[in-house]
Image 1 (cartoon, rainbow, N blue to C red):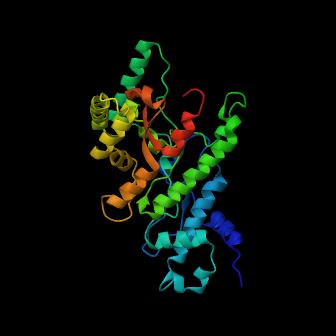
Image 2 (image 1 turned 120 degrees about the vertical axis):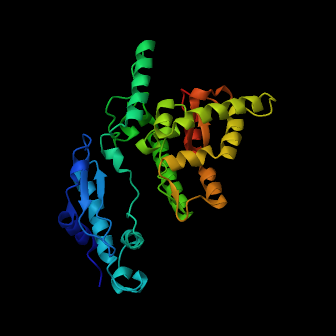
Image 3 (image 1 turned 135 degrees about the horizontal axis):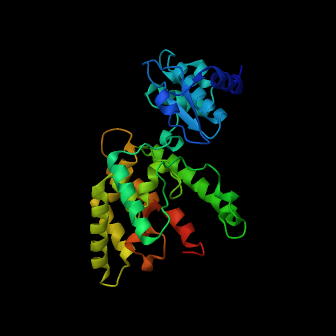
Length: 318
């Protein structure tokens, strides 16, 4: 016999996905939808909220969570259950996570909610907007930042926009997905590999943006300045450019790990990443530049995947 898994998911999305909590629903960003799993796991947890750009997307995520929580009530080991063995890999992994007390998918719910700024964040934003006013520039962030559009860059202008490079963009997304899986299997939790600037929880990866850095930790701004100054001194020998020197200094100081921890990225167990996990992260991520390496300035620095940096370096504006 085979399970009617599509029907099971449809039933769960229609009957086990309820409204979000009031404090979440009140902050819902325009164009976004929420749904909350109404089924708890064996420990009574995981009635959590999921977001999406459509109600069907949010309901499906909550429905899969509900199925996973129901499966956690199976007695004994999951792999010994005939019901569990007939499930798809997606539901099997979801059930294992439910038994471990974890959501079945990693998501940052804030990307679907209007951000509520703290006093410190509001002060930093006011300072930035005042500086823009004095310089006659248009601020690139509003009073109430909202979740970014889920639309693909493929929808951009076909003359000069990224739509003319849609094949490359699809390959990059595939590489990001593969890297996300490799990092997860290596014990890195909460890190969804994405292009620079796509995810709100990773905005501070653009370390050239002092506003976003200050929001996460004011000390980050000072430290990046300090590491960049040290890199400039090292580069005076002429054997390496400042960007290569900055990677050396920043890695030695653990700046990349601080940026990840500020995005709620964590090891699978314990409180600190192991040397092997750090090596795995640095296999995919490093400090790069919005400009050419030998023309890098402090205001061009960002933390991103090596593949994104290579692809970006081939664009005509770089």
